[in-house]
Image (cartoon, rainbow, N blue to C red; front, side, top):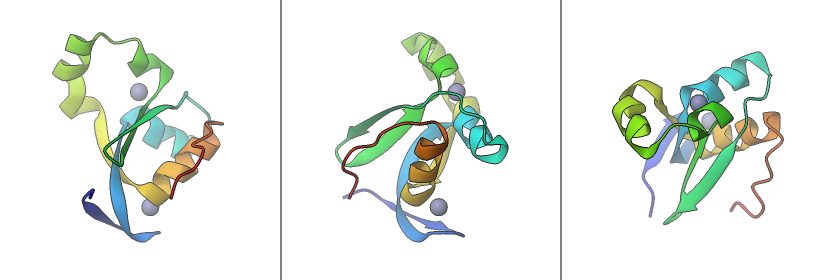
Length: 89
Ligand SMILES: [Zn+2]
Ligand SMILES: [Zn+2]
């Protein structure tokens, strides 16, 4: 079971992991890409730019680029970026 996050908007939600550019797209409303995946029920997504980083570059910059997001906000972000999450709980 994934850990819960307390979101000001959505209340208690499973936590997801995204890059900060996706957070920014939620503020600006401008899509940046939304390449998502789900591992053991935990969702994560990165933008097109971060998708071009090598595995090593991502590891090095993960603390700088990575942000936690509640699943509710994750769905909002997906919508802004025209991503289809398919069947999410
Ligand atoms: Zn990014
Ligand atoms: Zn939320």
